[in-house]
Image (tube, rainbow, N blue to C red; front, side, top):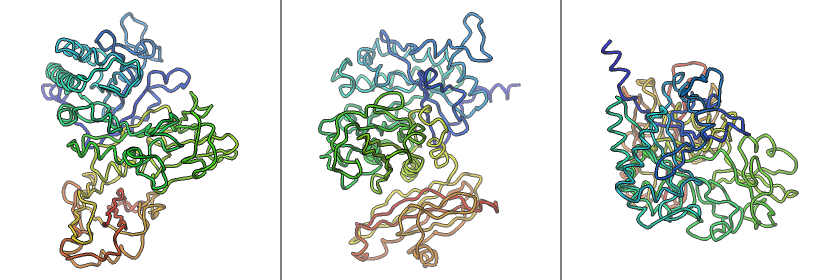
Length: 534
């Protein structure tokens, strides 16, 4: 009996990588998407959006949707919990690996954060209300979505220069109170925050002091461009480009800094450990209206405001809606940027351009998360991806397939450096064989494997040449995983005085294959990594 009790009270083991999805309270209305619709087998965490901040305390955002709406199996007894909060309890009971966090604030409800964290007394009271909230409603943690301290949110928000320091002090207070309550209850509560991709707004966060306090940071790496005009958005552009595109005429810093990869690098350069970062992935697209001529099939073209139509509001399109009502319909032409690694749609007759993410672009963003050894991905939000296609692509990469990473991925040809590549497969793959394959042929469409997986590099004659190469120069490209499912290989470029100048500007792609022991699908592929020569 004692052992059973101790096991029940033990803190839940956090997964090494995370797939986090936001569930919005308003999904239960016109969208008709409910907590039981969440594909719990493909996620690790649910962020419930949003709780409000009223009078310096956390407050229910939508009491009816949150705790009152009746679902089959609910009770009408006085004080009985119903609504989406009760459904989250049921979901966790059926899927014990899932953790839930209450997200506080968001774009609309960040207006009173500044007052709530202004003094030591107000910070303690606000933190106490959050701790009581998660205890009362059986959440596993708190996700703070203050958009944003100091500046950058709604014009009606109360903001102060002191928000920068006050937010850090509040997070420290909240962490202490969560830990104290967790000790009482025999569990550990989680704490995460949302952080901006815009470097100017990110400067308003004391990131170097914050990251040791929180469990992870969700990077809001979307809405990087949209139909808002101004210096950042003079032409149609991508909602969430992975990398810069050379044809993008947007001036600096927007040309290069407003990408998913740049946002990740921003926080890594400020000292955040890679496993505490989550890449944000949108399940929606942004539409531009009154698009003029010029650009590339409606991209980088003049426009005027958002598209005068959308899924639930003008200019915003759920992925499922894009798939069902726009792709392949009428004169909508689909294109994809080989540099930004995202697709877009354009209709000449409707004078509209839609920038969106599809399963392929989501998979590539998950590749970046894996190559950088990040914590995983975060998706906004479930109802925009009703068939879990985007979520499925992300979960497949983050939770099922092996990880290939390399701390150094830039090699100067004049003074070459070594490149160490690390393979991280599930522990069940321990002792199995692996092979690292290299190619100059790029990533797509890749090489089809038996069983339906795809090795995400295009094979050329380089792969067999590397595998046959002698030891010190190309070591460990073929071997057996250790007892933890790990392996390391070394590209010994540092052993050479110089590399051929012809390599400058080229990218060498690598991916790993892991034996499965299953004849129908004998290999599991990793993500690709790119090694660039300069």
